[in-house]
Amino acid sequence: MQRSKKKHLLQQLSLKESAIHFIGCTAQDGSVKQPREAWEHDCQYCTCDEATFNISCFPRPCALSPPINCTKEGFVRKIKTRLDDPCCTETVCALLDRMLWLTLPLLSIAECDIKTCVINKTACELGFQPVVAISEDGCCPIFSCIPKGVCVSEGVEFKPGAMVPKSSCEDCVCTDEQDVMTRTNRIQCAPVKCQTTCQQGFHYVEEEGQCCSQCQQVACVANFPFGNVTIEGTVDVTSDGCCKT
Image (cartoon, rainbow, N blue to C red):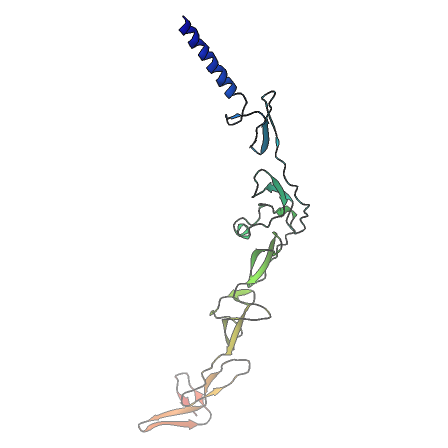
């Protein structure tokens, strides 16, 4: 009987010691915090109240961001999480990644607000093609025209090496050399080479208004066993092809 009472007394003492050992606050992660103990959880400072064993938490203070004005075209102020302290935020004006504009040219991305941009699309002349770039000190798209590397003549584009129709007295070709004034490729022309060598009895006679004239018969040619003889005089070619002077 006495042994049973002693065993029961020891169990009660053990339970009291356990209760005394685990007196405190149960933290958010299930751990037991001692009275007046402080810890940080989810960007908050927490403490265990020694009287009530309740947990009191308040946001961890953050340093104030300095005043910032976004003066560059296309930028607006944005609040983002600090890289060095995920619990705090900061106000920034960050430059948009230029590569994003190449794949998503007309969208508002990151800290750039394209709705604030003044966009002037330029229609390009013949021989030029439109391109879009990002300004050096901003994030707004800038449209411009750059040469295609072609020749332009009479409202038509010609690639280098192509023949370019001009006057009937010239042979013209598009070169790969750029004209510094027009920024289009130069067209190089040369006079048409005329065949001025005529057969016996014919002379090359130039005609006004014609680039290349023709050989006209000015003498009859008689064929003899010893050779051909040119007979000068007034030439009259009959309908059967005979020549007489």
